[in-house]
Image 1 (tube, rainbow, N blue to C red):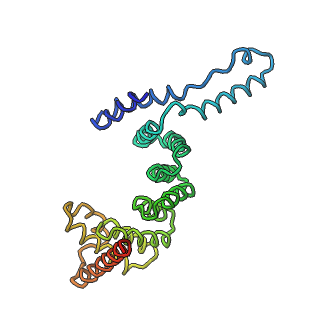
Image 2: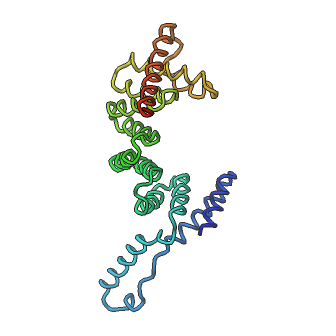
Image 3: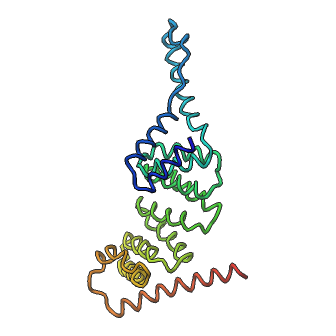
Length: 252
């Protein structure tokens, strides 16, 4: 099984998606084969007993179908399922992974992403917060919480967590755009504009300069003034100083 999962990953890395998809489905089909119901029961006169036996075998099979996989195989196959948008299988695989490694931060965050994609916001939030209980400054978990709150119309929560994200990493353009989006959803247009311009400044000065241009062009147009740039630089400086203060307090 491990060899076939590894081969599927290799095919994906090589861009051979069709072959990888075929092999992935073969793996899932092999793992999902149900245990047969004892023939003596199925041939019996009591059809209700046979029906109950079938149900029992099906439940057992569902419960046990990942039992032959180790943690690494669960992880890899779960990612493959997610890539192919088979989120139901990805959820099942990562829930099994979680049952074995409940304190694994990456696993918690990934399961949270799967729940979010499957429109299970409550479960998604629980996973991200569980990851943060293991590492309160885990930026991926914080970022995913921000996205979740923006998608579920909770802009105040999104703003609170994006402020934490900015305190942890004040030099990433995307963090300012997320703050701008949260402020926009709160009808705080002037503040939103300042943060979006701050993100634009950082984006244009990065080695991938202008990679997020479509985001801020739609919102800012061509009406940016020198005063706007000055205000935005103040926003960046404020968060850089907060980050420096945090780092200083850690080293004391």
